[in-house]
Image 1 (cartoon, chains in turn blue, red):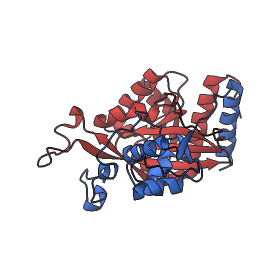
Image 2 (cartoon, helix red, strand yellow):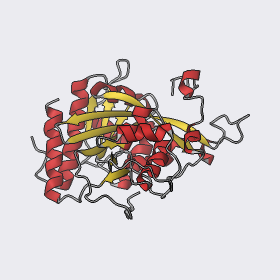
Image 3 (cartoon, chains in turn cyan, blue):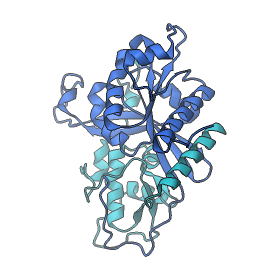
Image 4 (cartoon, one colour):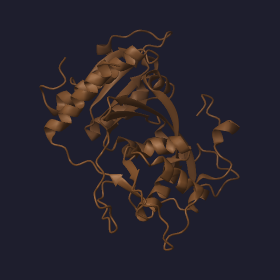
Length: 126
Length: 203
């Protein structure tokens, strides 16, 4: 928000209300709220089934960006849609089997410390 | 959040994580330098969330003429630091205003830790985030942003004023300087490491 606390016209986002692209839905179809840093990736199985509603251009853009593993936050920033909207669209694609969530296996304590050490080394090398 | 999805039509093999993502929160009052800090060390990208309006915003968000409006747009500062090929650090600025505090728990979920940016002229604006991170048991550091025209205080005085536990580091920083921001983040990760295993994180 600008320091004045007032929105200028260009801050107010797109002309179409964000949830118009989800058909007014504000909750993911399966109720799971993906974390901002949850990693998703396409399964390579594009949804063509007649059982599902047709994909919108926004669905297709997400699908395209998910060819490589990507976080929910990166997706939302990339396609400039609010996180809540991206979550709804992602849930549609997950339900259709076109996208899957990359689940990290629970790491052992030692591995967690390895990661912290790697972060420290990386920050020091910046 | 945290629920396990049962894939009825699941993939043959679950994909192997190409990288691990870690989240660090940047908290602090309005104008404390959160955007500047994130921008100093990473490319800041605006991240919009469309949040349900709560009663907390009644009287603050002007709803006259849009009585049907039930959501409001909240912009977060969002930065990304790639470390090696397998680790990515994400920085999220926590919306400082009290009426956005309902978003904190979602943002704090799974976070490594937090940096609270303090402006010595408005230290009271840190209280809410100090209380919040203490109650969640989330490791944090207090970084005193040295504004050019602000009085200088010893970090120990700030620690005393905020009634911080002895294991919470209090450091001076310049949110505009990448080297300074780097030191703050290193201090935080060292604090996280020290809390998880006493021998890790030493230089």
